[in-house]
Length: 175
Image 1 (cartoon, rainbow, N blue to C red):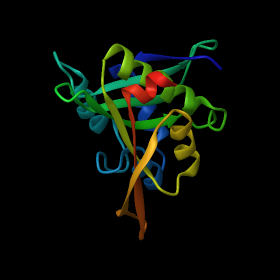
Image 2: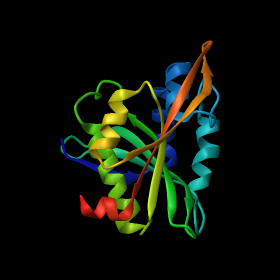
Image 3: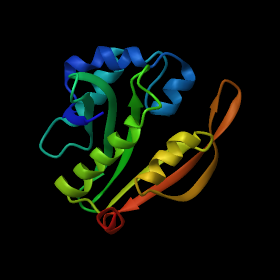
């Protein structure tokens, strides 16, 4: 499948809200940012961060170029232009489309934006340590594990730890 990134728009909010169907899904997708159930009001406030002259957030809908369907969502947040860094976050493949490599293509596409278009130096992310498929995806895209933050979230009575990963511009360009 060939994917393309398009800017996320206000009309995308209801669809995205419908994809977050449980507390664990919400925590994995947006730990600490949203409350369950994720609704249009919360997403509208988040979307507002994409506006203005120098937004701190870029949100993308991910399109199947052949079918013209939205198959995912991905963000570059905490954009720090002075230090040329950002955080890759809210990587979500539409239910029913998972497991086919779309996530890897999404991450590669957004890294082209980060390092190519935006001229950033570093992109980092946090992923829960049990999410091995996501960690393998990020490693395929060039991210390196940089550390483990133990017991960062409690979800349904159990603590989850977070793996910190990062990639630098020269590592991206060398790939």
